[in-house]
Length: 327
Image 1: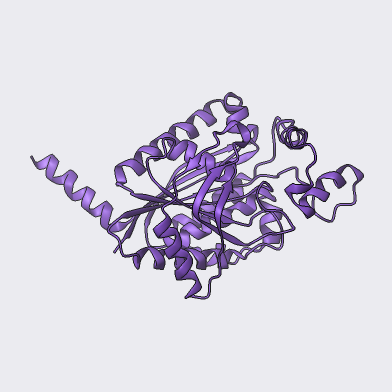
Image 2 (image 1 turned 90 degrees about the horizontal axis):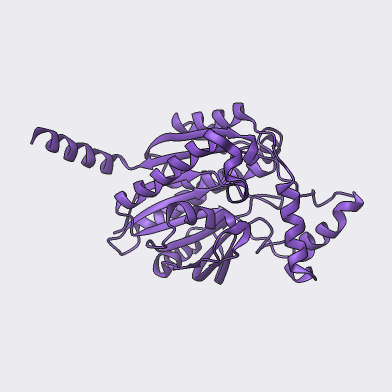
């Protein structure tokens, strides 16, 4: 049977693509560690990456907003924020097996044969799998359009993903990547805003992409909303509390964080930590390590990377290292 051998959880920010140098040494440290994680996944021997992230009102709107979506056939990147329009190779057998396992275990994914993903997924590809050498199973979590799935439900989804992988009739090695968070406040209006300047965007958020009459103008307006921010609030205290809870495997606490608490302490963009909860549900017994944390107001985000490794694989590596030293 297949096995999960590694995982990486990391923040994403469109500002990396548009304002890379603005973050100075902090940004350079993050980018260096991201490159090390690319090597970590290559060294792990992963044959498949289950890639968990969210959509930023590019594919899903209030006219159709699933909590969890899995791509089971074709997948392409939107090419937003200067990222490539990746033609992503999907590991269809595993994707369909995860979908079927869910259906037999009271988890009803939305699924699509024609998935399109934005920078939430494609920035993870850009940094960790840029040549698309490793096929992907893309899963999207609703972190943008309340009401959101609970943190506990996201953790349970991760447990389901692990059950599916370990029952997959294959000898392939699987890695899990979660992309999103940590603290950041996104300049997207609340759906019930009555401000006149918000109404055109709210109309699109409610009714879907088909309501966009001038796509380029719409995308430029959204881009301007974000890039006009030269700096943004980051809650380092709560970012570190979240990471500390993971290191100490105090999953019970963060599984019970409410959307209201996250909105207050980590911002509307901080709701993306749900992607991490899916990974944690799958890798709850894995060894973990905070590889990097940098509060980067210039990227409007608390930027973190964590590495996860199964105890069995880590033990084998230590034995190999020990033999090498003795020789």
